[in-house]
Image 1 (tube, rainbow, N blue to C red):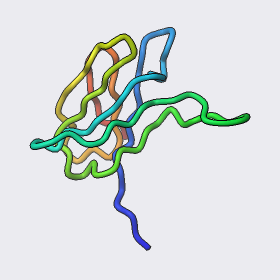
Image 2 (cartoon, helix red, strand yellow):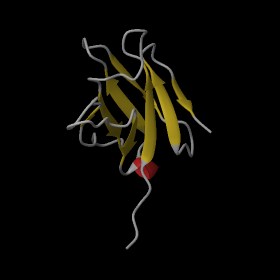
Image 3 (cartoon, one colour):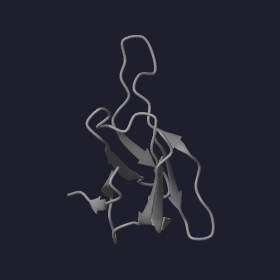
Length: 97
């Protein structure tokens, strides 16, 4: 079995919510938006979700949309050939090494 690599997305939120818990993410494919993925903090008994989200189809995406808790929306183009990015609540989108 082989899988297609996804785009790793790390959110950089404000002081009270640095991981962006409650934010929703969508990839922009130019002609449509991908499915919504929500950043959650805990999904079960004694467990913790990852702060880094993996969005499928990232190699075909041209942009990203992040809706922060409270309603602020950040949209922007993806850095060329990025496999991992950071989206800040201030509106910046940067490639990570």
